[in-house]
Amino acid sequence: MSKERTRDTKRAVRTFYRYSESFKAQVIAESSISAVCRKYDIKGADTVQKWIKKSGRTELLNKVIRVMMRSEDDKIKQLEAEVKRLKIALADAVLAKDALETLVEIVDEEYQTDVKKNLGRGLFPDDRYADSSFRQRYPILQH
Image (cartoon, rainbow, N blue to C red; front, side, top):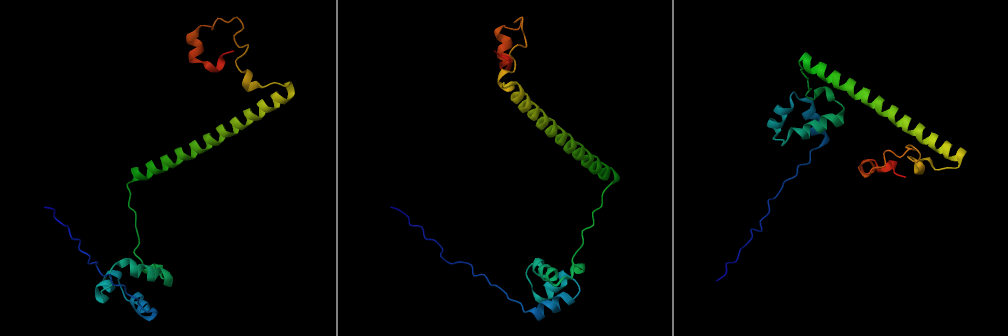
């Protein structure tokens, strides 16, 4: 015996409200957002805040005041200084890399060679570092 499941096909009906411009102006002229929302049964304070922003009366919006301890403020300034220092160091490293790449290109053109390809050849003329463990650790230096 099998049971059949029935789905509830009823959907919640959502009501949308359209407010006139004169009503919006009247609401904005009144005192507090929360009081206006209760008085006119406006769902969500965000609705009234959008009206206030559109009308350009942002002085009516709630203001956020941030209170911090001096140690928190000092820590933020220290971190901002560290970020600035690191950005400068990164810029210097990028410039140095670009300069070295340009130098390698110039050497390649002047001496008709490929410096990157030949890197490591002739570094150890007496071949005292020829053991296999050294070559495994430093494959770029292999002949």
